[in-house]
Image (cartoon, rainbow, N blue to C red; front, side):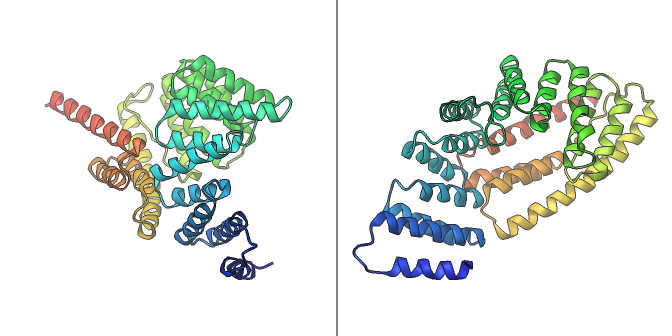
Length: 348
C-alpha cells in the first residue's frame, strides 16, 4: 500500500464524526499518520500529529515515542528529555523506554542517571528473557562505556568481559576493553584489542577509527613514529579527523617530527573542513538545532578555531539553556585557551 494512499485513508478516519470511534483508536490513527509523515521528512508536521494523539490519549506510549524523535531531529534537547521520562512513567516495564531515557541522559551529560537507566534496561531484559546477557547493540557495552567515563574501571572491565562472553568478536566491546586498558596504562594489552578489530575489519570505518586509538596507545608508550603511521593510515580512508599531538618528538629527530606534524595537520585540516561544510549545510536547513551547533563547536575547536567554536556553543546554549554537554564543551575550550595563554606568557 502506497504511503500517499495510507495517508489519505488516515485523513478520512480523523475527519469522521462517527461517535463509535473511540478516542484511543483516533489517537492510534494520528500516530500512524505522524509516522508516515515523519519518514517523508516532514518533522514539524509529524510532531503536530503526535501532539494530537497525546491530546486524545495523554498516556499514549507511541505518541510520546514519536514526539521524542521529532524533538531529537529538531535539536530540542531538553524537550526530548521530558518525552523520555514520560515513556518510563507510562509503561515502567518497557525496557526500550529505559534505553532511550539512558541515551537522553548521556547526551545531557548526566552520566550517573544514564547508567541507572541502562542498569534498569538490563534488569528488565533479564526478567523477560531467560539467560539474557545482551540486548540491542549490546547494552553491557553501553553500561561499560558509562562506567569508564565515571572512572570505575574494574566495573567497566566486567561489563566489557560480559559483552565479549556473548559475542567474542563484538567491535564495541573490544574497543571498550582497549580503552579501559589504556586508562589503566596497560597500553600493550590495549593494542592487542585494537589489532583484533583492525585484522577482521579490513579498511572499513572500524579499521580507520581503531587505527587512531592504536596510535594513541603507541604514543603513550613513546613509540611516536609508529603512532604517526597509524594516524596517517587512518586519515587515508577516514572522513573523521584523527587528533594528532606530536609535541613529544620521541625517537624522531626534531626536523622529522616537524615534517610529520605538518603533513598530519594538513590532512586533519582538510578532513575537518569537509565535516564542517556538512554541518554548515545542515544548519542552513535547521538553524535552531542545538545539537548541530554543539557539534559544529566541537569541530571548530578541534581545528584550533576556538573563538568560533565558543560562539557555536553559545548558540546551542541560547537555543537550549539546559544543554549540559554544550555548557561543558564551552567551559573546556575556555579552560584550554587559558592554559595556552599561560604557556605563551611563560615563553615570552
